[in-house]
Length: 591
Image (cartoon, rainbow, N blue to C red; front, side):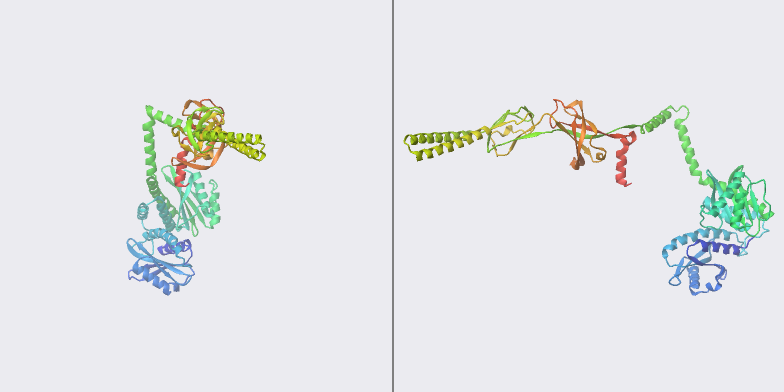
């Protein structure tokens, strides 16, 4: 068997290559005299004077004394990292790594890779005999002892992945293989699980793909495949993938052994040899080892799949309990649930609901023509009026008095004019005539003002202004609005659409409204404009949408309210029912 010291040297080489920016690595062991002893150096060209360097010596002393991670700068471009190695609860030694960088951001990643490598180091150290610090069990040791040691190691691992790593490391060390790979059977085929002494491997690389192809070749034929560079090929077995791997890796021999549990293939081990192929005794030992390892791997697989199996079993029992024989209620529930799911995918018209109100297209205002007092009011809100109908009258008593006064002045001036003509007094006649004409003009103005005290309807319609019947006798100012007349045809519908649905509304869309005053009648409308500015109503934002009625009725009155629906588009029923919840979640969770 290969000496432990050689295995440790190869392990150190793997670490030096796997850890980024690592230019040198040293492995030392603490012997009984508590003095550090050099075990391995990497790279091979590194001289032993490196360990005598002041920075290296100081790092070794610090990590062995404090038994914890130690970092120290070497110069402006380099840094040392020393890590203690504890085996079976005791300080075994230390590993010292030199990096060609002082970037401390790389330390966590490099430390993680080193700790992964420590798992394999512990395995190698478990192989040593207490009497010998550097060798594994001798070749003539009983196979039962070696297998017991292997089983003990495999069972101690916490996961299937760690068990696989321990197995390939054990086989590579015991059989002096340059590389050992393990692939386990999955639903999609063989999956490469572990590679000996490799902290990280990428199955997408050409080397790992070649190993996977070789494993598939053995599993597909259900046979062990042995390819030797110096021996003739077996004509009864297809081994093209093995031969390609042999040429690619430039090794002497490649052997693939199937892992069988009863009659089922659960995996395959592929071994590569650079120095010498497997001997007969090694083959017998390997077959015995794999027989034992198969049971451990199957046990680990069952343990990791236990949760899935329990969940599957629980689900199966529940389904049987609900939908088994004579379970009519469960079957009806399942059928109803399936029908409900199918209904969600049926297309339907999506109607946007809104509040609606009826407004008149044309409105006329009746205002006070002059200052005065209301003396008579003929109509009240809601009354239908005709054009020219008297609505109210202002008090014209002052105008009547003024009219009598002007009429008397005009008669007096007319008499003066007549006397001046009789006396042939032309100058006096002209003055009197001017007074007559002035009084006549003022009298006409008064008569016009008297006529304007009669407030009449300017158009047919309905009174929609506030009730002013209680203000009889109250003063009014010129220009004050007294009545509002809305046309009783050409109505406009105002729809208040929630801001969440406004994006679905477009000009020209059809809709329908139902008014509270006429619940038995439905009126069709068409959208003709959408207000770009929202308004707050009851604490929410709404957009005003205006629509025109396709037909009118004598029962319609301005100001009627009700509810409206606008046909937006066709959507799935599931979207129509649940899109509000979906939009709310997207708004709250921002996705």
